[in-house]
Image 1: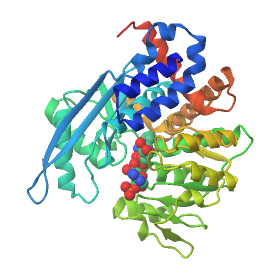
Image 2: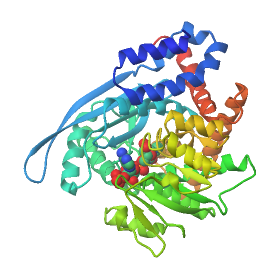
Image 3: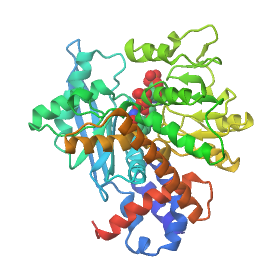
Image 4: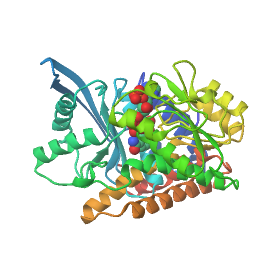
Length: 441
Ligand code: NDP
C-alpha cells in the first residue's frame, strides 16, 4: 500500500461514517501522489497524517427560546483545521443537515483554498444544524447570540476569523458580531462579511460569485474564448448563485436557470435577476414565485438537463452527479466551474476531465469569497476602507493568480489542464513548506 493509501485508510478507520470528509480527503490525497513520490521528507515528517487531523474540534450545545416560549437545542461546531500559514479562516453554515463530517470536509478544503489565494490565512469551518428558514428575526437573533456566547471563547482577530456560508448572511453576521463585542468588549475584525457601517468590506457580498466568473473567464481565455453569447446554467439562488449570475450576464452570457431546495426555473430568454433578488432577498420567498412569459418552474429533474455552454453549480455539495455530467457533456458543455463546495461527485469530475471539458474545482474557483474576507481583515487592521473598484480589481488579480498557480502546478507534474490536481498541489505546497519549517506541532 502506498503512503497516501495508508493515510487514507487510517483516516477512514479513525473517522467512521464521516463520508463527506472521506470524499474531500481522498480527492486531495490522490492528487498529491506525485508530490509525495518526489519529496520523501513529506512522509518522513508525517506531514499527511498531520494535515488530515484537525488541530482542534469544538462541539457545543446551543440552547435558545423560540417565539412560543419553548426551549430549543441545537448543536454548534467549530473545526480549527490548520494554522500553519495564518489564523483559522472559514465560514459558518446554518443548515439542518450540518454534521461534524460536513464541517470537517469544508474545513479541510479551506486549508488548500486559503493557501491558493496567496494570503496569510489558515483553514477552519463551523456552523450548526439550526434551520433559519421560517424563523422570525427575533428567533434568529436569540439563536445567534447563544451560538456566539460559546463560540466567542475560541475565536479572535488573530486566532480564528469566521465568515458566512449557507444560511449565514449579513443579518446573522450582524447579530453574532454584536454579541461578540458585548461579551469581549473588543471592537475587532473577528468576523468577515460584516455590514459596511461596522467594518465590512465593499464587494464582499459579490466576491464569491464574481470571483467564480473571473476564474471561469481565465479558463475560457486560455482557449481563446469568453462569456460573450454563451448560455449559462446556474444552480442555487443564494449569495453565490445570484452574484455569479449578475457578473456572467454583464459579460455577455445569458443565464437560463436557477434553483432552490424545492425546485428550479428555466427561462430561455435570460433570467430577470432583479425579480429573483426581490423574491429571495426582500420577500425571503421561494423561486416558485418567479413567473415571466418565457419561464417554467419545475420540481422534477435538475438544471443540468438544459443544454448550455457553461455550468456553474452554486448550491450545495454533491448536487451534480454522473448522470448530470453525462447529460451536460452530451449537450456539448464547454466549461464547468464550482461555486459551491464539492458540488460535483467524484464520478462527475472524472467524466468532465475525460471529456476535456474545462473544469474549475471549488477550492480554486470559489476562493474569491475568502480572498475578499482576507482583504476585509487587512482593512480592519489598517482602519481603512477601500473603494468597491479597488477591492474588485484586487479580486480579479487574485483569481488570475489562482488560475495561473493551479495550471502551472498541473503542468509541472505532467497533468496539463487538470486544475483539480493543479489546485490541490499548489495549495498544498505552501502549507507543507510552513509545516515542515515549524517542526512537529
Ligand atoms: P445561501 O444560503 O445564500 O444559498 C444557498 C442556496 O443553495 C439556496 O438557493 C438554497 O436553496 C440552495 N441549497 C442549500 N442547500 C441545498 C440542498 N441541500 N439542496 C438543494 N439546494 C440547496 O448560501 P451561499 O450562496 O453562500 O453558498 C452556496 C454554496 O457556495 C455553498 O456550498 C457554500 O459553501 C459555497 N461558498 C459560499 C461562499 C460565500 O462567500 N457565501 C464562499 C465559498 C463557497 P434554499 O433557499 O431552498 O435553501
